[in-house]
Image (cartoon, rainbow over all chains, first blue to last red):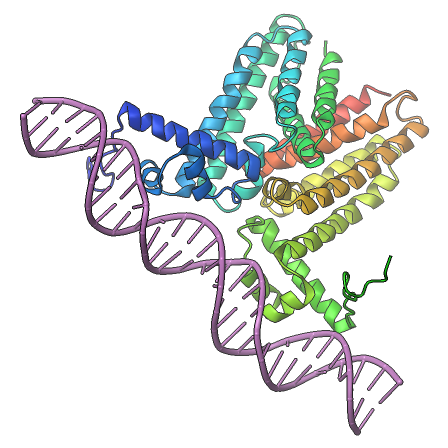
Length: 208
Length: 208
DNA sequence: TCAAAAATGGAGTGGCAACTACAAAAACCG
DNA sequence: CGGTTTTTGTAGTTGCCACTCCATTTTTGA
C-alpha cells in the first residue's frame, strides 16, 4: 500500500491562532445547533457568531457535515468531561444523586431548550448522515461505559449486590437520561428527566 | 366578536376523493419523514411517493409545516391506535410484556431505521417550530395518560401496591421507551429498547 | 530578512427546493 | 342539465444557503 500523498493529501497544519479560530467556530456552531437544531443552524449565522468569514470556515472544515462531526466530538467531550469526575467516584447512592442533579441542573440552566447536546442530533442526522450516526453511537457507547464502570465500582464497594448486570443497567440508565431529556425538551419542563432518573435510582436501591 | 369570514376564511370543504388524496399525501410524508428525517424529506419526493402534483399538495396544506403537523397527528393516531388496545387491558405483568414486545417488534420490523415516529421529530422541530413542539408535547401526554391509566388498572387488580405513584411511573416508562428507541435507532440494534423496558418492568415487579 | 505557508476578507454563484400562477378537467348539486 | 366548486396538471419563479474564487494580509521559520 502506497503512502499515498495523493489519496490522502497531506493533512493541513494549523498554527495556534488557526486552532483558536477553529475552536471558536466549533463552539459557535455547537451553541447555535443546540439552540436551533442542526438544520436550522445556518453557516452564515455560525460565521457571525464566531466572527469569522466564509473562507475561514471552509479553511478549517471541508463542508457542513465535517463541521457537524467536529461539533459531535466537541459536545461529547463537554458531556463526558462533566460526567467523568462524578462517575469515576461512584461509590454511593449519594454520588448517584449528585449525578442526577448534574443532569437536571444542566438542562434547567438552559430552560430545557436544546435537550441533550448529543441526543437531540439523532433525529436529524441518523437517517441522512451515516458517519454522524456512527459518531453518535460511539459517544453513547463511551457514556454507557463510564456508567457501567461506575456501577461496577458501587458493586465492588458493596453498595450493590454482586450479581447485578452492570452492562444492562448502564444501558437502561442511559435510556432514562435520553428519554427524560427528550420529554423535558418537548415539554419545556425538567420534571420528566428528574422523574426518570429517580426511577432508575429507586430501582438500583432494590438491588442492594 | 364577528363571525369573521375575513379573519378566518371559510374552512375549505373536501370531497371524499379529496380526502383520499390528502390521506395519501400524509401517509407518503409520514413514511419519508420517518425514513429520512424531517428536513431531508423533500416535498418533491413526497409528491412522487403520493402520486400527486405540487398544486395538489398546496391545495390540501398551507405549507410544509402544516403538512408536518398533519404527520404528527397521523403518527400519533397510528401509535396510540396500536398501544391503546394493549394498555386498556393492562391487568397483569404478562400484558406488560406484550406491550414491550409490541414496541420492540415494531422497531425491529423497520430494522431500527427512523426510531420513534414521534420522538425522532423532536430534535428537528422543538427549537424551530413551536406549534409542532406543542403538538408533540400533547401526543406524549396522551401516551403518558394511557400508560398511567393502565398502571392504575394493574394496581386496582392487586398487581401493584396501592401506594404506587402511577403518574411518575408512567413518565419514567415513557422516558425508557423514548430513550431506548433513540439508542436503538442510533445503534441500529433493538437491544437497547428491550433492555430499557425490561428494567422498567423489573422495577414494577418490586412494587407488588 | 525574505520567501513560503497560513490565515483572512468579502463579493460572488449555482443549485436546490419551497412555493406560485394559471388554466383545464372532474365532480357536485339545485 | 348547467353553473359552481373542487380537484388536478404544468410550468414556472424566487429566495435562500452551502459553497467558491481570488486577492490580500499575517505569520512562520530558515
